[in-house]
Length: 325
Ligand SMILES: NC(=O)c1ccc[n+]([C@@H]2O[C@H](COP(=O)([O-])OP(=O)(O)OC[C@H]3O[C@@H](n4cnc5c(N)ncnc54)[C@H](O)[C@@H]3O)[C@@H](O)[C@H]2O)c1
Ligand SMILES: O=P(O)(O)OC[C@H](O)CO
Image 1 (cartoon, helix red, strand yellow):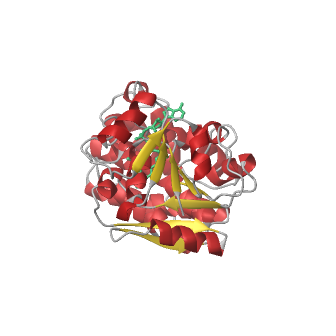
Image 2 (cartoon, helix red, strand yellow; image 1 turned 90 degrees about the horizontal axis):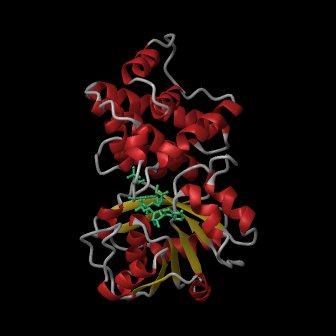
């Protein structure tokens, strides 16, 4: 199976490195001609994944038609651009492996819904889990959820993408895998706020646990399975992203917690902090489904400019309730 990767940010480049394991050829579509040339000639992506020497079998292109020659495509562009980018490719019946974590603003659709509307004949898979790109690219051990409804496609993709340091766990729960990845980014911002505001480790652990309850409530309401939400793409990724400044979402939260404005923190960013875009649309979708998500709502208020002390005070002043989802 020849693999193509759409998107030359940190994660697309790291996944190209995984797919190139063992000398297999990989074609990586990126947006800029200079970046494409640097990746192919110098075997590095200094813009998005500095310090990593890429496999010699990775070739980059800016021409969507070049990807007509591959058998399956990993789609690794930010969630808000996925629809627009995918419209530029002819996919037919080839599998699309969606690797972005988010919900499309406006349409309120998950990535699989966006992709299926544009390429209805393509089998859809979702790859998600606790995966900092720079660790994966360095060959450090990583496990992910690979969800796809089609058993044959799922098995073929799992086998093709597995490497000694990269272990896909197969699932049929595409919605569950998507929801874990989208919601954890919002919760990671909340945990960053706790860090930035100096609220302590107890508060961070409480946020992870109550945030997971929110993720589970929302996921179950959307048809996700509880075991997927408790797996790599849900709880696993939540724990990773809520614990480390390597996370762009957590770092954004740290800035908010220190009292910096969302506008200044997001201005001129080259890299994406998906939670900032997912938070408002997640809240709208949750309200529509009658699901209460107080932590995610607090993140929305902070992104809109509310004061940290006020938002934290309101969260803590909610009526006492029984524990559980
Ligand atoms: N970086 C990671 O560790 C990691 C791990 C797992 C999943 N992800 C997810 O992968 C997705 C891509 O993130 P990333 O980290 O590779 O990106 P990045 O932050 O490294 O780079 C930004 C990317 O966005 C692209 N971009 C910017 N504006 C665009 C536009 N108008 N149209 C199309 N593309 C545009 C850039 O070309 C670049 O590829 C996100 O959904 C992210 O949550 C990232
Ligand atoms: O840097 P973040 O916050 O986008 O997190 C990257 C990955 O999603 C971690 O699994």
